[in-house]
Length: 544
Image (cartoon, rainbow, N blue to C red; front, side, top):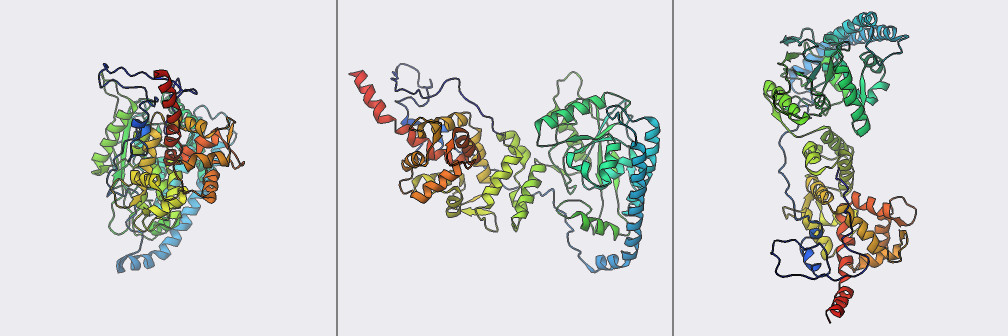
């Protein structure tokens, strides 16, 4: 998320002032920004955002890796159809076994939890022994899914050596396996608590709930990880640092929660060898994935416990570096690539699917890189995608100049063309979502963005009240868009009036520009230029 930064003093005072330029100064010495004599030079005739310091940006090429794609969505080949028909009676029996094991495990878990109120401390031993019933049921559930045997390599390190275990995440099968194998404490989304059966069972694992979009929730989760990892009476902790499931053909960026405490970590890799049926839970529904699992003769699963990764001795290593070493160890063991995708890319792809886009994967941007480079949050990226999709992109994910103007409620003019050209870095006459996102993020990232938003509000607010009227906004916009009619002014006024109360407050104004950072080009440069004649005249009087 782009940080809001303000200056300790405004760049323009409320009264005109004189700036004396001393020519003996070295050329490299910077002059105060936007003083009355160098104001014109702060504007790039071709770049409408030069006054912010945003002088163009680069757009990386599209990635060829789709870490969320399931490669056997359809049932292809005669063999698969025959196998499904033959396995239908077996699938029915497996479904019965699954339901029976789930019910027995649920009842055992309810009994183990009954009367236990002190959930801040480790679960008593007798309750843990009762949970063995549920653990055995979970192994039977794996059997019902076709995992009759599971190949293991290596062994779990003792809890006192490696209190935290991390694994790649391919399917819903891994949590079931680790529940049986390790009975760990897990970190899970708050939404899992309300899931039938599952919510009760994971509570018995003394789950740490986290809301990935809440800073306070993430901070609390990290503190709980530290607390439970430091006490040998708690089970070891299990985390899936990718934060979502992938197809196992890449390792996406790691969340840092498991690595911030700095404890030794044991990486584990899970692999599902297959020929006809990809078991990954990517862009496939849970019901379809379960059906395909039930109708296989056998599903293969391999688990390998890797050597423990500890913080380097005599070297100050932060959580990012520890996560990178662990991620590299897992990727190397799996022989797959590492990417900067994250759960945010899955959200973007899901949003594109909701808008019935032909190729939702076109809208993945490797959000982990975006967040680290531009401080733009996933939720802000999703909001920008929602706006981009309303521009009616074509099947290849491109938007035309006309549709771009329509959604931003602009009219064709020299400035709107420059705004579009700023985003269209490849000069094709069309823009992609990645260009739109990076261009918007590049503007938001500028240190003076917030300051100029507030300055623009002051300049538009001619009457000096707390609100901008529709007439004042129209007068300001007329400086840069002379052909803007009454309907156009009203459309932009409605856009800036974010709370819909019929007037534009300072909060409305700044919020709108944060949501539509490209629009800051409309309200600032010409307003600053408007001060030039009066300032120059006053300077002339002083010189005389």
